[in-house]
Image (cartoon, rainbow, N blue to C red; front, top):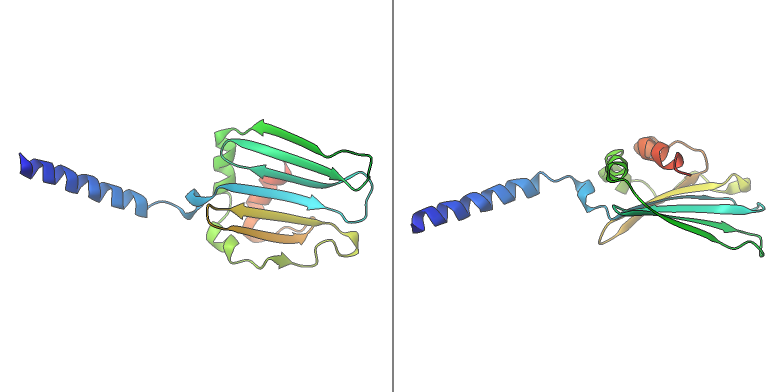
Length: 146
């Protein structure tokens, strides 16, 4: 009887170790933030949305004093979350510089994407409207959600 118990435990250990090694790095993604802003503009010139496996939080801010910030929270479809995290290569994203180009120079606007993990966040800021190849699929999905 002990022999069978050891075999079962060995099988379970072996199965778990194979499963864990096969996991993608993207499984460690806690959230994705996407945003854009313009330094010199009237009205709501700042937009940011934060996606996680359960919800989307959208924030709009105005440079005008008498316009209040707008915050919306909604549930996210699990299929959307899966599409987001599978639309780019996380290892390549982590290797990008923090700034690409000259974001918001001459009031051209700035965009950013931030990927959060339980231990660290990785943010890349770039010129508004610039298509960065490494995360172009992710950027396309996120910009459709504005």
